[in-house]
Image (tube, rainbow, N blue to C red):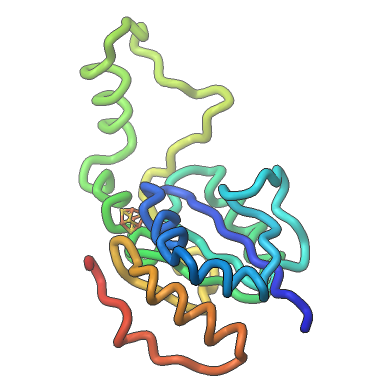
Amino acid sequence: MKKIRLATIWLDGCSGCHMSILDMDAKLIEIAQFVDVVYSPYVDTKEFPKDVDLTIIEGALSTDHDLEMIRKIRANSKYIIGLGDCAITGNISAMKNLFGSEAVLERSYGELSDINTSGGYPCKIVPKLLDKVLPLHEVIKVDYFLPGCPTPSEAIYEMLKALIEGREIDMSAYTRFGK
Ligand code: SF4
């Protein structure tokens, strides 16, 4: 059986949803028989590869780099799972939408800074913040949604198992927003 080329990425998220993937514990060994992890924070791959079968995305879109990445991922992924409430609604990541990017930068690099940044924000090398944090589906087509904060590991396992076996699954029994 050909292995599924699997990628995972976290954008503007806290990594909690990636911790949930690891929380599958021993079931990871079962899943690993059927997948090759070709890109992920768990492996040392620098470039997002071509011909990925399934990409799991944690986090919302907050920067110009996130937009660039998400378009590249969509172009090279057969299926995409939005993992967790940040990816699906913006959730915690989108709280800055209440204030705007300028206010957030001023708070971080001005008011709360331990050193004198002379009123300058990081603007070279680091990605530029978008004016508004966006959930994934506002920019790309998302094939599957796995809500939760974080998404329960059991839900990730059941979803992956169903995809590996090529069957449909109703995830409503396994997930809920904000859990
Ligand atoms: S949904 Fe919750 S656990 Fe997942 S990345 Fe967002 S804040 Fe973290």
